[in-house]
Length: 166
Image 1 (tube, rainbow, N blue to C red):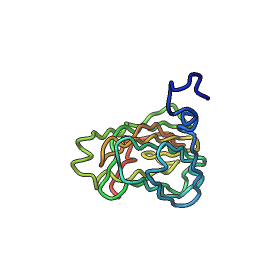
Image 2: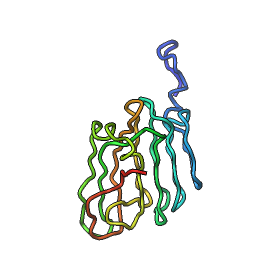
Image 3: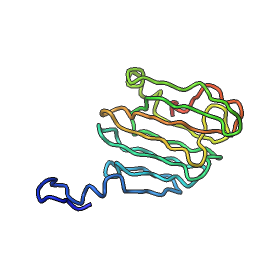
């Protein structure tokens, strides 16, 4: 997308690159702040993805390329936490679990209690099937906002427990 009028937008062709970085992961990886804005494709049934230290504006979209049948997790940097909403729906029955909702105030009051997200595709309280996506945005220097709807092959999803203490 070239700039149609000279000087109208000083970013010019840099706008074409926004959100275009894809990181494919098959092994445990620690992301960096320079990876912000990337889509992370997780191609392992058991893997740990560690986020950089939270800083307002950093963002990632994590997509599971395969089911997390052996367990996977997303970890914050030391002292950081997750908050937001996690929904869970069954792929085998018309059922939804009770969403996990954690407020910003709750999470930052005890960050060590909300610093890990666990995923196992076939469980009643977690989920993490192929194609599920987790959107993460750092809102300040301690907290990552989470917004996701996960799927499980379990016919009776229960109360979601994705965000936990490490």
